[in-house]
Length: 185
Image (cartoon, rainbow, N blue to C red; front, side, top):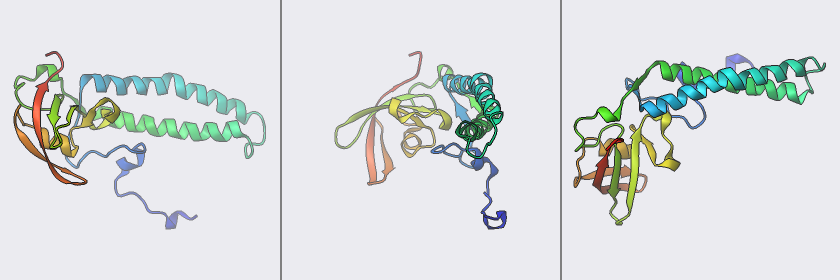
């Protein structure tokens, strides 16, 4: 297809976003915990020092085998190189603009701020514990949610015992803050 018929992205940064990754809200800072920042730095180092050189070696070897049009190692290797390069660009951009916030330095530990671990109870009496982290380090399976998520935004600046209103897909819901903790407490 001709490039004349393809839509160019309005935001060049979105082109490097991995699948499922959220773009930063316009004008927002890229807050990260020290652990999340280190995890992304480690991933970047691994991709640049180990993964990419291995794939380059495979592609070089496969290219020397002749016909590249039906060479699976070559085709897959080139595809994997594009994926690695895209992830490297994404990580580099995000780490350059990262603002590391050490939750251990939080002086007002009676309210919910970035880096807090919050236990709350919903209207059905279910208790859940979440930790508010950066956009790029959120891992829902570990109870880590992005500070820009609806629940985190609702909880920010709340104190123990406060009831806050959260907009959910099923409509508004009220939750009560049961406990607030910060790493090192």
